[in-house]
Image: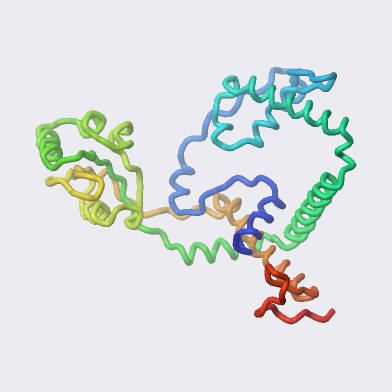
Length: 307
């Protein structure tokens, strides 16, 4: 793992959970979509926090619904997307099993073992690292720095042209020719894509969404960008995936994200830069010695700094 990767991971941990916002011009168009309906509010006089019933007990230790939710949030994103009722029994079992194992460990006095104490010390050091980095980053992560980072990104990433296209992908030229003939006769493109298409887009009527030129197979991109809106390809296009019949749905220039839209991602980017500066500053004043894996001095290691 590179230093920058490790630094980034440490900073993310220090900053806690931050919503990942893709810093791309297309984000502005996506942000304009209607928001999902808000969650239902608790009944008058009630409280979401107060409504936290006990869901299990193990040797007198109580577990509440909030404990189940907290455990779920620690699992893989794929698991978190599953309906809660589907995995609820397994989550409760996991809480109970973890508690029983914990009790067995304490009964065996493992909390006093050298291994556990070493692990606790390492965990403490990590929390101290995160707390110090977060405190220093919070001092230096100013609105001016965020605005400067935003202006720099906008300058380095000018909006590109993009198109929205649909396609019908089939295995042979004969199939594609037959589809083009049907389309010329007035057949519905989306319906044919659903019936004849061989890739995952058929479930969306062949819709590929918006894309810039360098995000598609070159031959496909060249053909799509050369078409007019509403036009359907008159001859099949062959690529490594098969034969395509293309319909150009729309053309547009990307709209860059606003500063507010980009701020969450900018905060992480700027925080990582600040963290790198902080660590380099510490290294400059530290006495550092590096050795090879066999314990011999590292040939290219810098000379120790005098304090």
